[in-house]
Image (cartoon, rainbow over the protein chains, first blue to last red):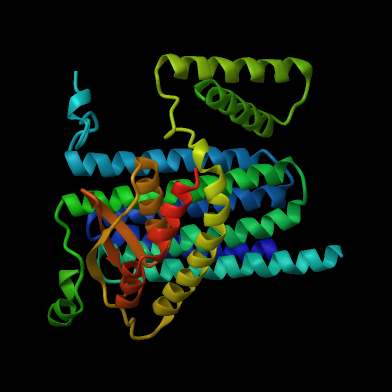
Length: 96
Length: 110
Length: 160
């Protein structure tokens, strides 16, 4: 019962964030909304473990979290440098 | 005793859900990119922590609760990193912070 | 010191393996131990085992610092939530520069991440020994300029 309430609240906030991701206006707003949606998806997976009684789902939540941060950093790097292979500021001495 | 724990965890999880909704409303309502970021960090910190705390009370002392603690640490270490990298990228690309006076004159300039 | 540090990394990795696996048969425990030792050996050859990747020297400091940080996060998250549901949205965003007094990169990262983790303030960039911070309200900016968080992070760093 309580799980239904919490999942409902999370779904409401997820759809609000989806509206922000659709509205934009800059690409960073969309990436921010995507990052927050990823956090909510982790929480939903962690709750689903208790709803379904299958403890594997918290592992899925962990993997989702790791993928979420890698995705966010890839998006920011691409829109900052225009290239994922760019080593970044301050890394010049590591360039081959 | 288990009833008390159930009620406590229900309270914690509903509070977390409320904070998640508040954060999402803030992301939708705030003007400008950097101010939206502050609203999103409410979801990442208080909303996520309260929900995971409620789930921890439900699961008791088991392997699942250890994994939930790892999940909580992951959120706590990674969400500021992601936020900072996004803010830094926006700063590098020259996105200006929203100012109250400029918002009054032209609302489309956020 | 270096050897002690490597052993501590092996133990952390092994505990992580055990928690994620959840099976305690002799074969899997042995494989987990072997994998932890191999990973640390590879990392040692790559010269990436240092005070940054596994900041063991902070173990005494974080015990004192994290409870204060969590209370601070809850307080400022409550403030930001009140601002969001306020019908007129009374925000006064400011961009300011904050001096940091930490000496090591680990301490500087801790301070910048603490600023970002607290709702209402975000560290945007690091320039020299200053952090460019975006604050949602003037009050939050004033709290940061007051420097209590800076002092506490430095104390946590210096307790090593």
